[in-house]
Length: 308
Image (tube, rainbow, N blue to C red; front, side, top):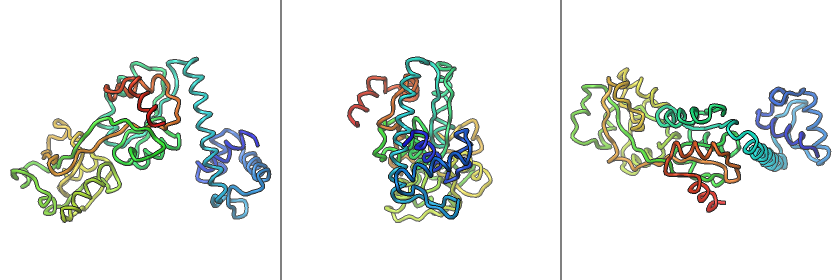
């Protein structure tokens, strides 16, 4: 068994069973990857991948176990590299952040600007998706840190720090009848077409539960994962928009009116999530402190100590 064989099967799985894509990523030849996988399977006396002719079509049951173990080995190899870099390249490296569109657009810019000024030699990668994707990217080691709401705090492979709380607002065009309502109610939502986050997206499981428990069925005509998209369609007169309050900019959104909904929905918490077994580079500690000043290095270490 050779380390590069583990790397090959791991990368083929990551590339959706495409041997050619894995070979390109690993800067080697497609026949070489196929041959090493075949030798690896022969040594183990089992098949990792299901095949239809020469094409890989799936992953066998023992293959799923092996791939999980291989992913752990790859992650620990990255940890070893991080240790080396921490002591030989203190202020250089790569930081991959996974987060949602709203966090990336409205909450992260100040911290990222501060970080880039402090660590100009650190390359930043920003992956955007829904909270489930963010959680998966961090749990599989594709991202160093995830910033999202709800689901990321429920992933047992991660240690999570509560970053901040937020709530929601309704945005409507100027002159809309709801601007005259003394206090919004859930029933008000049912009278108008509603544009909001996808119900699998940030905080929306909380929203759908509130409507369900109140026996109110909103008329959801359009969903999106980006608050700016929601506001665009509200501006077109296609409905009212339910968004995170942080996503409303009074200057940029001057054609809209923001109506507070914090009395209708419970607060949601955004978490910073990292794998429990990750080696923390010094600049990762600093980024967390820049985004959430309540967490200094000793406070972060204490949380890791409790959860490990």
